[in-house]
Every structure is written in structure tokens, then in C-alpha cells.
Length: 393
Ligand SMILES: Cc1cc2nc3c(=O)[nH]c(=O)nc-3n(C[C@H](O)[C@H](O)[C@H](O)COP(=O)(O)OP(=O)(O)OC[C@H]3O[C@@H](n4cnc5c(N)ncnc54)[C@H](O)[C@@H]3O)c2cc1C
Image 1: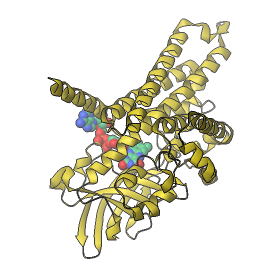
Image 2: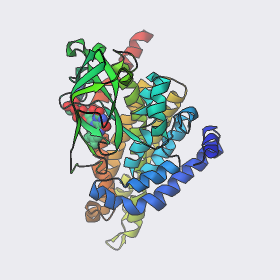
Image 3: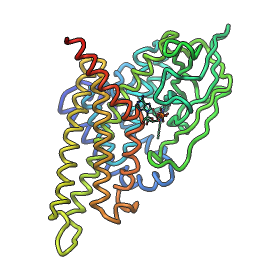
Image 4: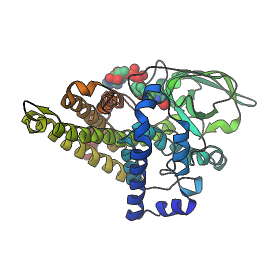
């Protein structure tokens, strides 16, 4: 996408947004669909496909134009992530990272020099990044982070281990979190930008995952990694706030990807149910099949509306804590039940890789775990509701 086109998309008109959504849809159908089954099996995203996406400006998202992004509004961003996810949500992960898990902390807390060095090339798709929050013994409990840092005359030294970190194979840097003293809980946490090639950084990918197979996730290890003072993102002690900013934006992405994946299952099921003849008639004529189709239609519509509501809250500049939990939890639960029903409708063919629903089924389960396990969101949603009820009394 040219810089003129970027400026037009960033202008926020509905026609421009529709045009971008149509461009992403066409790209996904024509360029991604023929490849996805093979690269999912190979557990590797094709680099030339990512280069094509970079040329089209697909990584720019909500990052402002001045930092190399498209300056999209959040509802349009959610629409393009949904659109690509109708074919492969793993590309949606990469498209969302500059605006969400990796880039949102840089945008909000970074210095101009940090944004120039990391955010702009990230939004332009010239480099990729990763976010290192989860640890082998603390996924849900971010305040329980054990990775340590100490301050030296030359900057900082980081040591510890992260687990399940995505983009180990392609990231040029990681935004990660460490504590100066674990007994301080969330107050002890600081955020750091760690170049992937810094001495002492090691990676150990996990292979043969259930889902999200093209993404390279695994251990990110820091063995006394020496960092210059400009590696600190935000102020010391702001790490928890930075992590929450990142995961909140990330939840909009998970919700959009879950809606796209669920829609792909519905599309496939509508087609298959009309083609498959059993007992002399299309299975679409059986009311129990129709029951599944109608549950899919309603669930997806509701999930999309909740995702839009979350995107609009973010667009108004609100924290969107409750909206992002509701959208992420509902959309991922919907994706999981829709994918399960889609397999049922496809019968035995549903479990073969010949049809896309098997991959969707494997990926849908993972949505319920990443960016806050859904059980955690249940707790958070109830807590927020109780807080609001008490405030209103
Ligand atoms: C494919 C993949 C990619 C990932 N990519 C990244 C990445 O790029 N960066 C990153 O930092 N992380 C990443 N993760 C990690 C992911 O964010 C964590 O798995 C998630 O936060 C849950 O943490 P955990 O797995 O340690 O689960 P745990 O915290 O061990 O929890 C296990 C289960 O216990 C239950 N539980 C825990 N606490 C509570 C509670 N308070 N109330 C009720 N139930 C509870 C829930 O059911 C939960 O699922 C990725 C994970 C996967 C699978």
C-alpha cells in the first residue's frame, strides 16, 4: 500500500474502510487459502507471504501514521483481523501485534527514540516482534513474575525464563517483563525491550502443538542479558500497567480472530450440509442439523456485536477492561462450540485435513486459553460487575 493509500485509509471514511476490508478478503482468499493447509502442517509461516502483506501495509493497524501505521480506527481494525481469520487467524496474530500485544505498550509508554527504532519498522512489516509475559510457573498470575532484573552502572541485567512466547523464529525483539524483587508483586514489575540477538538470549521452540501450528512459540531464556538504559520501556515499576495495556488490546484481536474462524466454520457447514446426501436427502433438511446451523448463526452474530462494542469503547479512549474480557471470552467460547458443531456436520470428513474445519477445531480450543484463560475472564467480569454494583449503591 502506498503512503497516499495509507493516508486515505487512515482518514477514517467508511468507503476507505470497506475498501481495505475487501482488499484483505481478496488477499486471504486468493493468496492465503491455497497455502494454509500446507504451511499449517509444516508449522511455518511462509516469509514471502509476510513480505507481500508488508507491501500491502497489512501490519499498520491502529498504529498512527506518524509511526508508520495505517492509523485505523479500532472497529475497522477488528474487521480486517476478522476477515483474514476467515482463512487463517495466525496471520491475524501477526497483523494485530503492532497495534496490540507488542506495539501498544511501545506507543503508549515508549520514548520517540524507542518508537522510531522498534514501532515504525514493526508497523511497516519490516521487522516482527514478540511479547514475553508468560513464564513456566506464572501464566495467569502476571504479578507472580519470577524473571529478575538488576540495575548496574551500564543499565540493566535480566535473568529468567519465559514460556509459550510466540514469534521466536521471526522476532527481532521482545517486549518483556521482569521484577526487581518478586516479593513486591505487581509494583516490582518493569518492562524491557530486548533485542533477539542480544548476548544471553536463547530460544527453545515447542513443536507439534495442538493448534496455532504455524506460529513458533516456546521458551525465551535470559542468561544475564545486559541491556542499555534505553531498553527500559516506561518507568521502573510501570511493567504491570504496560502488560495490561498490551493484553487488553490483544483481547480485541483474539475476539476478532475467533469471530473470523467461527464464520469460516459456518460457511463451510452451510455448503457441506446442502451437498451431503444421507438417507436420500441433503443433511441440511434434518432439523437437528438446522439446530446447529442456527446456533452458529446466532452465536457468531452476538460475538461480532460484542467485539464491535469492545472496539468502539477502545475508540472512545476508554480502558475497555470489561468489554475486552466479555468479547474475548464470548467470542472464543463461541468459536469453540461452532467448530465442534462444524465437525459434527461434516461427519468423518470433518476429522480429515481435507476440510478446513479440523484446523479450526484445533485452533478454537487455544483461543480459550491465550490472552487470559476464559476462567480468569469469568472471574474478572464478575468482579467488575460487583464493583459497579457497589459503586451504584
Ligand atoms: C499457542 C500459544 C501461544 C502463546 N503466545 C504467548 C505469547 O506470545 N506471549 C505470552 O506471554 N504468552 C503466550 N501464551 C501463553 C498464554 O498467554 C498463557 O497460556 C495463558 O495466559 C494461561 O496461562 P497458563 O497457561 O500458565 O495457565 P495457568 O495460569 O497455569 O492456569 C491454568 C488453568 O487454571 C485455571 N485458573 C488459573 N487461575 C485461575 C483463577 N484465578 N480462577 C479460576 N481459574 C483459574 C484456568 O482454567 C487456567 O486455564 C501462549 C499460549 C499458547 C498456547
